[in-house]
Length: 201
Image (cartoon, rainbow, N blue to C red; front, side, top):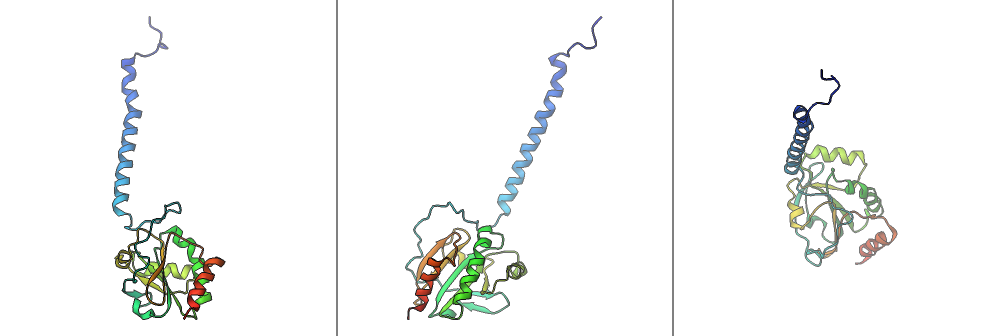
């Protein structure tokens, strides 16, 4: 008489062995589908990694492309409206963490220069509508002008590859600096350099 404690044969174990394998296959397939959906729905512009290797900018030394954009609040402005000023153009998005990190320093820089020959324009590429941008501005108590570029037209004309990217334009309308990625804009050496540009006639 066979003992009831005798081990089962490999043939008997085989159906049970396939259960974990089947579950693993389902998990892998589901992960693939979710990843594909995320790739399709993610924003066109990506946050720039702080480790991204700097490349020569095609914008340096060229005349800044003109644009016409709606300002948060309704007014339409153009680049020509700021002729004769040092212009600080920051292209950003509310979902971009590096953008959020650098904005307090932008606000402080703006506060120290806003009454001089200087203007700061933060151009949002958010596609979620004006309210999303407005809520962000109110949350972080930003006072510099914010423009809306939901179709990334300006971002394209300025040849950006991600967010944030910043352009410093001199009083003659020429791009003299292109910053890829975030920066502490109120850092003494940076703020002093911009102040010198503003003071030049």
